Amino acid sequence: MSLAAKDRRLGWGLIAPALIWTAAFFILPFLAMVALSFATMDGREVVRGFDPGNYVRIFSDPTMLGALWNSLEITVVVTVISVLLAYPLAAIIAFRVPARWQRLALLMAVLPFWTSYVVRSYSWLLVLGQNGVVNKALLGLGVIAEPLEIASTRAATVIGFVHFFVMLLTLTIYANLIQLSPNYARAAQDLGASRWQTFTHVILPLTLPGVVTGAFLTFVLCIGDYITPQILGGNTELTLPQLIMLQLGRSGNFPLASALSVVLMAVVTLAYFASSRWLRLDRV
Amino acid sequence: MRVLSYTYLALAYVFVFLPVVVLVVFSFQDGRLPIPPFKGVTLDWYAKVLGDDDLMAALLNSLMVAVVSSLVALVLGFLAAHALARVRLPGSVLMRGVLIAPMAVSYLIIALGLLTVFNSLGIRPSLWATGIGHVVINLPLCFAISYAAMGDHQKAAERAARDLGAAEWQVLALVSAPMLAAPLAAAFFLSVTFSWDEFIIAFLLTRFDVTLPVEIWSMLKSGLSPATNAVGSLVFLVSVTLVILLEIFVFRRAK
Image (tube, rainbow over all chains, first blue to last red; front, side):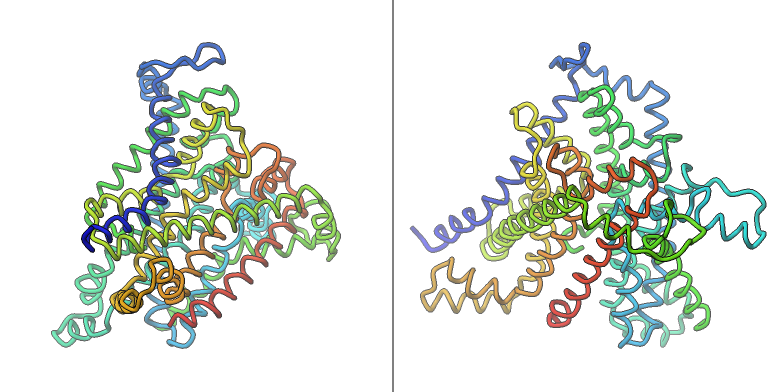
C-alpha cells in the first residue's frame, strides 16, 4: 500500500467516530422527526403515513400562525437591539479602555453570562415583576403612581433575551475588533477620512463577518428558546417553542410538535442562507 | 467623547449586573418572598438548599453528565480535526459542514429528534440519553476549536515525530495533544459549562434522575422563593470561580 493510501485510511479512521456519532444522533433523529411530522393522531395513538395535514394546520390555524409570527418578531427585535447595544460596548472596551484593563473590563461585562440560564430569567422576574425592584424603586421615587406591568409581557421576554445576547455579542465582536490592525484606521485617517468615515468605510466592513456570525447565532438561540418566553413572557403571547412544548405535554401530539419543529428549522435555514455570504461558523 | 464612552460602559455594567445583584441580595432575605422590602439577613435559605437531597443529587448528576459528555465530545472532535488538518480526504469540505451543522440547529429540535428515535426504539429517558444529546451539541464546538488551533508549526513537529518512528497514537498523545493543551482545555471547559447549564435536552430526555437546571425549573413551578435565589447564587459562584481559574491558568498561558 502506498504511503498516501495508508495516510488516507488513517484519516478515515480518525474522523469516523465523530461522523458516525453525528449521523446516528443528529442526522438520523432529524430525519425521523421529519418523517413523524407527516403522521397523524388517532386519539392518543400515532398513525404513520404521509399526510401533510399538520403543515396545513400550522399555516391556517391563527394560534399557530400567531406563534410563528411572535417568534419571528421577538427574534428580529432582540437580534437588532442586541447588536446595536453590543457593538459600542465591545468597541469601547477594545479602543477606549487601557490595554492592561481590557481583559478585566471584558470579563466583567460578560460575567453574568455564566449564571444558570434558568436562574437568569427568574432573576429578571424578580427585577421586573409587579412587586419587583424596578416597580418598587419607581414608586418610591414617585416617578409612577401605579406599578408597571412588565412581567408576563413581550417586553419582559425581550429584556431577558437582550441581556443574554448583549453579553454573547460583546464577546464575539470584541474578538473581531482586537484582531484588526490599527494600521487600517491610521491609513484611512492619513488619507483624510473623518472618524465617522473611518468607522463606516473601514472598521465596520472589516468586522462585518464577525457581527453577522454573532447575529446569526443570536437568531438561532433566540428563536429556539423555550425558557425565557415561558418564564418572562407567560402564556399570553405564545412563541413557537412554547407551542411545541404544549403539544408534547398536554396532548402528546408528537406529529404536530415535529411539524412545528420542521417549520422552526426551515426559518433558521432561511436565516442561514440570508447571511451565508458573511458567515464564518467554523471560526466562532 | 471619553466621558460618553465611560458613561455607556457604566450603564452597560448596571444593566448586565442588575439581575445578578438582585438574585444574590434576596438570597439572604429574612422572609418568605425574594422581593422588596429587604427584611434582614439570614443564611437559612442556604442551609435549606444545601440540606436538600433532591437538589444535591441533581447537582451530582449534572456534574457527571457534563464531565463525561464533554470528554467524549473533546476526543471525537480532536480526532476528527486532526484527520482533516493532516490528510487530504475527498469530501472534506462537506464533512466539515456536517460536523459543524448541529451548531446552527436549536437545542429543542435536537432534543425532539432524539426523543423520537429513543421512543421508537423503546429506550427510556435517562441521564445517558441526555449525555448523548450533550455530546451532539458540544462536538461542533470541540471540533471547531481544535481545528482552528492546528497550525503549520504543529504539523512540522508531528512530521518530525513520525520520521523518528513514532506510531500515530504516540504522535497524537505525546505531540499533538500536549501542544494544543490550552485550546483543548478551553474547549473542554466551555463544553462542561454548556452541558452543565443545558435545560431543554435534559428536560425532555430525563425522567426520574434529573439534572440541576431541570430541578431548578421544578422549584420555579412552586412560585418565588429565596431558596431559588440561594441555589442560583451558589451556581453563579461556582461558574464564576471556574471562569476566573480558566482565565488565569488557560487563557493567560495561551498568550
